[in-house]
Image 1: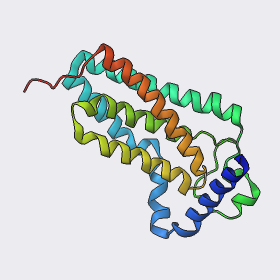
Image 2 (image 1 turned 180 degrees about the horizontal axis):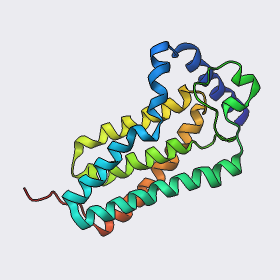
Image 3 (image 1 turned 90 degrees about the vertical axis):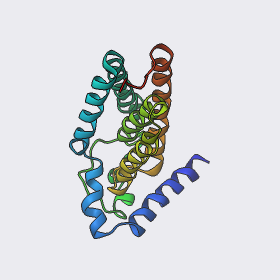
Image 4 (image 1 turned 30 degrees about the vertical axis):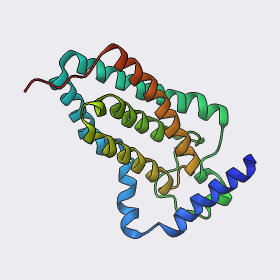
Length: 191
């Protein structure tokens, strides 16, 4: 059963590389996974929360950072070291069938730390700020999903790696958001 799932995962990765790669996508999809590209978004979020929600906003920022740190540590230091699934770019028979668009990175793939971190951000935002500003929900989800897709597209993760990371990020964000919502409440700022 596990072997069949791994084979299906590998086949899906190869299918993505065979059918979705194109010159213009190859030039911009790798950028989606770059941290520096999203720094303005992170700065905006921090400033928005600080100016609009003051002290509660700063607690929100600290808990968001906690959620991302926990997701990253759990993914990279616990799960990857326990599961030890090699990245596709480190598996000769797979690497020969895909086009790796960036340097391969670390040895292990499951779970994707990019997916865990970005889904932790997305779902923390959805479960806290999304209660007040509904329009933030879909953009946050699409943003995290696009970054996850980019991880597969560039050849450093299998689809199940990003799915596992997304689930991990969701679980951590759920717990952290529950804690935030049970102790603090975001209230619309006075006009």
